[in-house]
Amino acid sequence: MALNENSTPDLILVDGRITTMAGYDPADEVEALAITGDRISAVGTSEQIRRLAGPATQVVDLAGRRVIPGLIDSHVHIMRAGRTWNDEVRWENEHSLASALEAIGRRAASLPPGAWIRTIGGWHPGQFPEGRGPTREELDAVAPNNPVYVQFLYDWAVLNTAAMQAIDVNADLVNELGPQYFETDADGRFTGKVSGTEMMKWFYSRMPAPTFEEQVASTATMSRELNRLGITGAIDGGGMNSGPDTYRAMYETWRRGELTVRTRLTLHASAAGREFEEMAGYQRFTPLDLGDGMLRVLGAGELILYRSLDKIGQPADVGAEARDQFLQMFRDLAKNRWTIHAHAHQHETIDAILTAWEKVHAEFDISGLRWSLVHAEPLKPVDLSRIQALGGGVLAQGLFRFQGEDALEIWGEEVVAEAPPFRKMLDMGMRVGLGSDAMRVASYNPFTTLAWFLTGQTVNGKETLAKHNLLSREEALRGYTAAGAWFSFEEEERGRLEPGMLADLAVLSDDYYTVDLEQIQHLFSVLTVVGGKVVHTAEPYGTLPVTTANRSLGVSRV
Image (cartoon, rainbow, N blue to C red):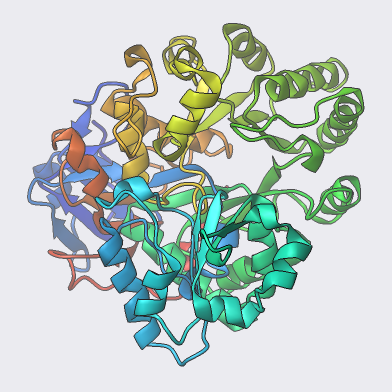
């Protein structure tokens, strides 16, 4: 325990069970802490911390509740999702198809006829007792006068009749785009269901986009929702359809002081064939120290070359020409001392990237740049040694919660059981950050993701990881806090609740360490603090004042 009796705190939390992440023992906790400005100023017993209080100090009685460092989602797509958040109906927290359809109906009742309603990923039919997604007829019933588009991962989407009419989906269009993408019934009539990533992108381009002001308001709302779940930091992976012009809303939300999640951006080109031109522009005009503690560009990622963008079930081009382009891109980034977070699902892609990194490292020392692989499920022992030799790490997500059955079918049980080999990685002391990969292919709820790391079970209850690769509660939480901070060079700034560290924390609705395993996915924060400022409250702390637009959320030293 540590105590600084020379500070008069602004806020103290007492009589709790505070996980500091200072050590590796889950019993390493304190009863109380003090916050002065944006930093933790003291930790200790409740009696010790109460003695520090001054007349203006706000005292919060935790009544035995669990406190954790603010969660850091080390790979998520909040920049893209924030632009349309208020324009979508989220299904992550719906537990039946009936309630999900009711949510669509409620949104329809609040909108004028003709206004679009969208649910774009983040859910799975397996979370519903019905075990399926909606039909066109069901969407028609709850929203007959509004176009509705519901998407599952990047696999398929369903449109209601109003959406089909708004986009003019007819036989001619089906034949033009490709009948193979459109499901038809026994009579040859389009059911409203379409398949394939390319079709998803085509429909996105036909739906109306929110105005810039709507995008800013939407991004601010999304960040508060993440605070509700204890998230105080995120590394954004960009995502398809993201380019230089798509970051304006995120930056404006930050400028107005309405961004309440510490966001680190990784940048990539907007389309195939533009990788070298746009990345050269980023490197020339985007200083990596631009911004503050709430928003800053971290480096490049996750898409390096579009031609080499693989999926769990889809290898990509990593032939000789692609490998040469990898080498050229990585050389340029190394020369400019940029960090890289590189997407790779297939082992061939992993090998191609690591081979290029090793060649670059022979010319430019990259050991201090923390280049890391994103996803990288089918890692082999030799890969782990290669990554460590380069000073890199791995950013892993709970994607098999939704896609585990697909991976088992494609890769087989033996590969999936070690995808990734968490036990070897942690035993070797590798840097491993955990995250969600939300918002399209996974839930943004960190507690559903944490539950997968603990159980390895898909949303349908199918086992994926071998038992020895399942994480303990301490290991999983560390991956979402202290370990995650390393990937943005902030391990001495956040991720732990110790004196001198940023006061980013969450008070949980139940005890993460003792609650039944199946209840972890239902946890949330009842009090979230970012930089010493209260950004979210729920009962029993609903009366505490919540910080609104306030630039002082930024870090005072970086």
